[in-house]
Image (cartoon, rainbow over all chains, first blue to last red; front, side, top):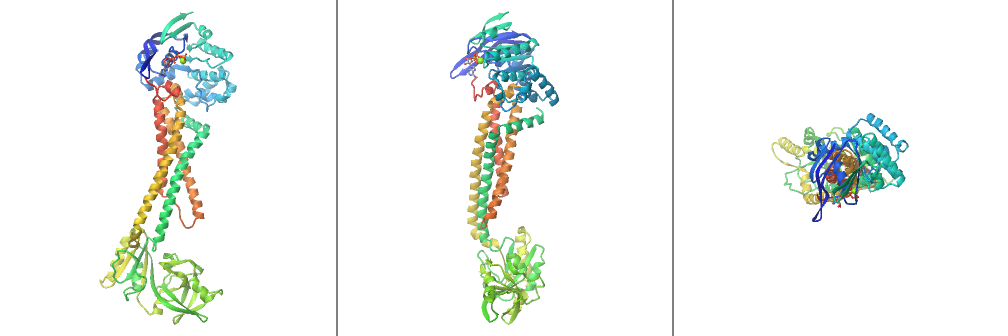
Length: 224
Length: 406
Ligand SMILES: Nc1ncnc2c1ncn2[C@@H]1O[C@H](COP(=O)(O)OP(=O)(O)OP(=O)(O)O)[C@@H](O)[C@H]1O
Ligand SMILES: [Mg+2]
């Protein structure tokens, strides 16, 4: 379902050009659980951003569910992203003025879903993430683990087929970190395609398919 | 996005970022208030000057006997010329459709006596319209009723100083005073501080026009004061009156009709400078207001670049994001400008109740342009950064970055 062909991403920094991604070709099937590891600066986040249509590749082709998304305009990419992809960021990226519930509701608001349908889906997600009694708390009243659970709730409320998590446990202690990991894995077991970037070897090793990046290339691949 | 959700989202932004909303509100309201108050000050000064030179009132015409070149300046107050204006002329003028009121005037010196006290005063013969047109107020008693101009009742009103000199502290109303060879009953006393076209009304006696004519044994009038209904009709009325009197006087143009324009032209230069000063004051305060608003707007939008990135990552199109920020700015600036206007009204109201010499008011063009300017400054400076942030790749906006090379 995800097909990358000869993906290239260059950044111009001053007079120099940095090849953040260098000829990356990769296929990921529906329902897979993939971890991406590698040293800092190896291009993991750059790859995730392109996979999530948050950024455009410099050259190369990206096909999602058979559709060439490289050639779509921004509005079309927004729609594809909304319908297919959920994100979890290392620093949560919650909107501080909104409550946990409102943060999770946001993608549905932007998609124009009716209030009734929103309420049903929200209740289900809050239930699933054990956030019911935290629903009306604002993010700064929540612990790191709870915040990341809210962020995961927001990522899955639109029922995307792909969940991208860039260092989801990077800001968490080991207990909350492993909670979040288990939560993500349980979502994967329900069928979502899960792609996780991590520095944590133990977490990375849990994935059946492990990619290792170096200098913008996929350097090594382990399938368990 | 549904429009109700859209509004609720904006409401949440304004409500939950209260400090920022307050600061923005202040910046806009202060701008609007500054423009309106400073302009009101300038306009107040202008109106003050206008009133000082406004001897006649904008809607007033004066007919005087005799032909005279009137390129400017006041006509001499001393009577001249013979009999060419009559009560009948005044009555004919009062029947013109553009004319609201007519007050003929006869004027002369007379000796007034009461209980052995003798005073030489100026005696005015006129009609009740004269009191209205000249804003003369009566502190005791009242003006006689507007009866036939031809009928000379033996009643009079006297200036406050004359009253004091003749009656001291005893009551004046109802007493009979002698003027020349006739007797008049005092029916009213003029308010203090009354002056009219240059001379003091403290020391005068006013009687019905016909009484004055027979007292002085004259047919002619010294002046006819005319008030037109609308200022726009002034020029037309002036022509009609000239034509009418020419016809009544066997085709001879032997009267002069003057309006205030002639007198105002001498202070026009001063008024022009004041107008320029008011416009200058208004534009400077608008500029200051604009800078205040611009600063607040730019700060708020760049603070929220991350949010724009997030909204885009979560499925908002660039168009939706721009619209959100524009509507947010539009709403707050509309509410803030309106409250700025309300504050201006309140301040001007208070100022006007406590300060008598100047009348402050903010003209409609200042109100409208302060509103429009505050709104367009807010919208412009919300639009520019929001457009930039909305057109960035979501990932860059998310990092709150300003710019990135590709
Ligand atoms: N916005 C940018 N402008 C310039 N260079 C960038 C930008 N984003 C990334 N890079 C460069 O691209 C390369 C890959 O960066 P990327 O963020 O993908 O690394 P990463 O593997 O996620 O690292 P980390 O583990 O530290 O998060 C780095 O050399 C980085 O400096
Ligand atoms: Mg990274």
